[in-house]
Structure formats: C-alpha cells, structure tokens
Image (cartoon, rainbow, N blue to C red; front, side):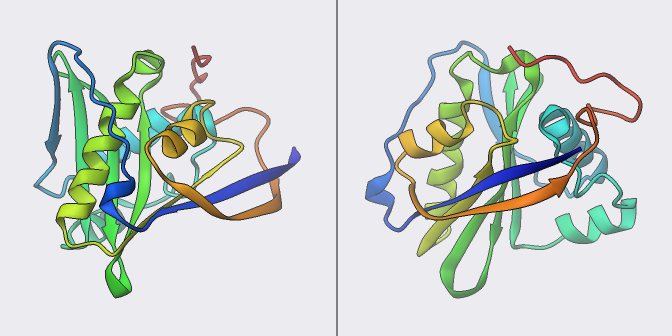
Length: 185
C-alpha cells in the first residue's frame, strides 16, 4: 500500500530544556548494553518497531549489525522491568557535537505504563553527559501514538516536518518474519 508519512524532526539545544519524568515502578532498571551484541540489538529493533513498520534494519546481516554497534559513537541503553527487556534507546554521536536518538521505544506489553518518559529522560541525560551540543531525533506518523508527545513533553522542539509517499506492506512486519504483530494497547 502507498501512504503519506509525516516525519517530524525535533531537537534539544541545552540540557536545561529537559523536563524529566522518572517512574516509580518497582524493579525498573536501565542499563547500558556495553558489549556489542547484534542478537540483542536486532531483537530490540524488531520487537519494539515491528508493529510500527520499522523495516530498514531487518535485512541487515550479522556482520553489518556488529560493525554498526562496534563503534564508540553508538550506545544502547536497555530498560528492564522485573528482569525482562521492556524497551531501549540507542544514541549515536555525530559530527560537531550532535547526538541522534536513532532508536527509541518500548515492547508492546510495556506501552502505556509510564516507562517511556523515564527511559527517554535517562537517554537524554546520558546524551548530555557525553558533552553533546545538540540532541536530535525524528519520529513519524507510523510510530506509536505516544512517541511525538513524549519527545515534546521531555523538552524537544520541532524544527522541520516532511511528508513522503511510502510503499509499505499491508501489515507491519511484527517482531519476527511471518508473525502477526500484536495490536497496540
């Protein structure tokens, strides 16, 4: 199917812009995945983005995942709820002191529990701790219903909007090939 996809580009230019939201969920832990692990990153990418048409990295071979992750510019932070991966945020340092949030989101069963604001807050704090001059992200009309609002609520401001026509499969890819993606909560 062909649809128009709206992409919003947002940025934060000063750490003082962050409006933190921290969760009081018991047993919530956010840890850096310090060892480059394509299996973990592919699992997170497919599990978080499967229902939102995240398709770009699905065809990547193991070696491509490893070379992408095995760079000092990339950090992956994983949220665990009671020991279970609940979501993640991936940061990539770029030229001139910019850091991009390249991936961010929650697994379907953790959406709507207040974990996203906490995870985004921790990711933003980590990005600023790297000596960042500009933090940016893009989200689109295919992403989860809370994505844009979460970025805006944490202090990001929109600096650009683009509309593109995209050819997409009739249904999102789901977390693994030939699966039916669970309906969002």
